[in-house]
Structure formats: structure tokens, C-alpha cells
View: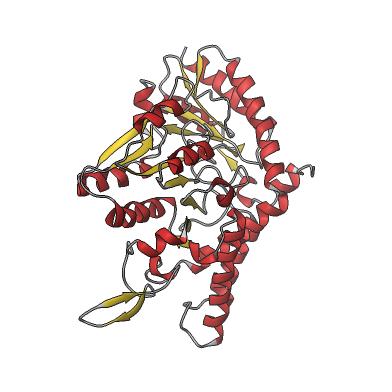
Length: 407
């Protein structure tokens, strides 16, 4: 196995080479957004300065060149998650738009009054609210898979929720708030035995482990570029062709049409049917560049190193008196949510920040999950392959300082 040269890798990320409050930046907010390697920054700059032109339908050189690069980026995404066809890859603005698109379009086609939709307690608001709105619009019913005290889904209870009225299951592969890795293959298998399609939110998974949508056999898979060391404003829907062909478009306008008259409009073929307006072609190419970058490092190598970081950080933080880790699932990615006895997470986060360490505080857009644990929120340290054990030591020392300050 290739050993990652972490110090060499860190030089690829210019933002890491700075000081915050006169201390070297320690960036542990990777679950919210990852930093970008110089190669991605340079690629976007080059497009704007040398290649920029609106894509598709242009017959001039710049348009044709950039159109080809945009479609090549789609193919890069297709291969990255092993989708069967590139026209099953829809490029969006991010996971949130991807889920909203599916909730609206799938709901318009397949969901009726009295039907049921299953999500889980571990979901981000972006995989809760669109389904709630669909249920309100269609007078459908939302059902929720419960969890145990470790933050693991109760699959026996999940099976009990399934009924002849269940129209879709939508769950995340990894919890953004706890780091729990869900057995989505089993979830999909159970749903498919009942002829129910499944959407997997992969926003927190594709950057940590290899994802193969054909092996999972999911019907929809979504993720964002900015959590994958790529640009902001770009995201992905993978959808099985049979559903995408039957579903109506979510947004309308240019590009997604075949022919428009004042009497009737016909829609374009896949994938363009779901890509209304000028796409974010610069970010799409930037995303492909980021994918190439991490594949060169090797996702297996990244996963192995990040597990080392998680194990090291878990052991260090568990040794701190009065610190409680929220989410102790047997299978996790490298994120630790925790609370400190008698110290508010915002207060602790602000002190830790003054030591140059970026952690996330709050409910992490997962308020129902916080309610399940009867807490307002947590501090979350989420690691990436450019982080180090020495940085984790700094977090440990910072938490001890917080405890000392607040008595």
C-alpha cells in the first residue's frame, strides 16, 4: 500500500500554510467543507482567464472546447462512482439541490395521498425538509428509522416501517453530525425486496471511501464537490435511467428543452432534461480535477490513514474527564462530536478558535438527532487526510485549557 506523504500533501493546500491569532491553522471543520488543492484553484483560474465561454450549442472554438471538457468531467464523475452510463449523471449546485430535485420530481411522478416515505433519525436537514414538503404537498406520511444510543440505525425497526404504501427510502451513507457509517447496502437490499427505490445521500462518504453505485444497487446517489476537495457550487445526482426518464424536470428554462412553442414544450434527453440554464461548467471541471487528485492518492490509502487519525483522536479525547463523545458507532468515518460537562459548546468552540483550531459547533443541521440525545448541540472535529496526529494533540491541549478556564 502506498504510504501517504502527509507533509508533501499539506503543501498542495495553500490555505493550511497560515496563522490564525498568531498560531498555525489547525483545520478540523472538514465535514462542513474541505480545503482545495492548488491544482483545483489553478484549473478554475485558467478556465476564467484563458478558456471561458458558455457551453453547448456554440459553434465557435472556445465553446466547443469547453463543452467537451464539461462532458469529460461528467464522465470522470461517472467512473468515480462506477455509474453505468454518463447520461445518468446530473450536475447540480450541490447535495441540497440534488435531494430537492429528486424529492420534487420523484414525488410528482410517483407519490400520492396516503403514500409513505422513509428517512432516518441521522439525516441532515437537507434530507428531511424536502421530504416533509413533499408530504405536505401530496398528503403523504413521513416515517423515521430510529437509532440506538451509539448512533446506529435500528434495521429491525426499519423493516417494520416498510409497508405497501412505501414509495421511497432516503438515508445518508454517513452521518454528518456523528460520523456513523450506515449499512446502506443492507438498507437497499431490504427496500428492493419490497420493490422500493432508495436514495443515498453520499455527501459525507465519497471523500472517505470508495463508492460503487452498481455494487450498492442504489436508485439515486447524491454528493457535493466542496466536501470532496473540489469547488463550491457543484453537486451530483446519479439516478437510474428508468426513473430519470419518467420523472418530470425540477427546473425549467434553457438547455433542458427539446422544442418550445407557446402551445407546448417538449423536454431534452438525459442528462440535459435536469440541467436547466447555464451550468456551473467551471466548477464541474474543477470537481473532475479534484477527483483525479484524490484518486491519485488512492481512496484506500486515504481511508486507512483517516482511520488512524480517528482512532488516535478518540483515545485522546476519551481520556479527558467530563468529555462525552456523542456517537460511538462501531463503524465511523473520521469525525468526533463531543460535549463538555457544564460548558456550552459555543463557549468552548470560541476559546478553541482563539488557539487557531477550527471546529464546528451547534446542531450541525441535524436538530432531530440532537433532540434524540437530549442535547442542544456538540463540538465536532472532522478530519481529512491532510491533518496530523500533532494537530490532534493541539486540540487535546486546547480542550484542557477550556476546562481550566471554565473551572
